Length: 264
Image (cartoon, rainbow, N blue to C red; front, top):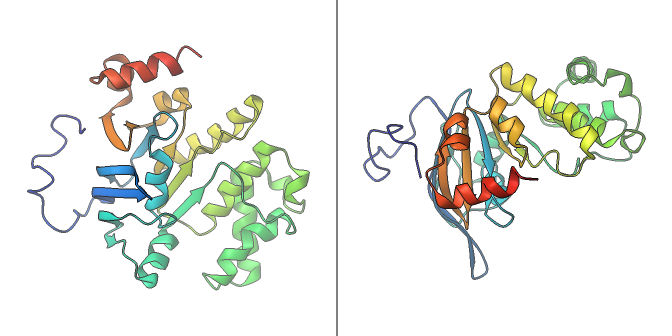
């Protein structure tokens, strides 16, 4: 469901190419796991610089949705554009899109046998062909930005969970992405570590990064999101600014979800 007035035409009436201000556009995107349909003709637009929080119950399709945007999952039907490029099975297009999109997962996915600095330098050296010295300069600047510069020469196992997640965010930023995707980035963290990761994400948002964040952190959604998207059973049920989403949700399913999550 789209907020009233957001679009002047229906999905079917829109032009066949995405408009220039959109960072991400999904039209009628569907996906199945075997006989189970996890995404049901999802339509979504994300403008450049927008911060979108995606929430919903377990199994609602929110993580699958975000993983389809950089082809970690392959959608079965519909169309996805990222920064004007249509996402198809063409490997060159996938690589181009992934070069514009950083992703941070629940698990930190850092290489345990490499130092934090080496984790950050690896992709810029191999993919961007940056000289080691330049990759290190950029990596150290980003570690300072996420406030763990003193951890550069340590191995991931020597860091706390919050420090590892901040290192993972810095690693994604090393590729200078135009879009950042976060798939429940705080769900594996102890409660005291959640705040430090959310602070880094909030700073990114303040600097104008286009962001999609799958999370149950409703305080973050209230403070940072331009829009909150609620999913259930593979569909977008509600798409609204935070003040409207939390104070006057239109859907009964949204109201039920909020009553459960905000009471805990």
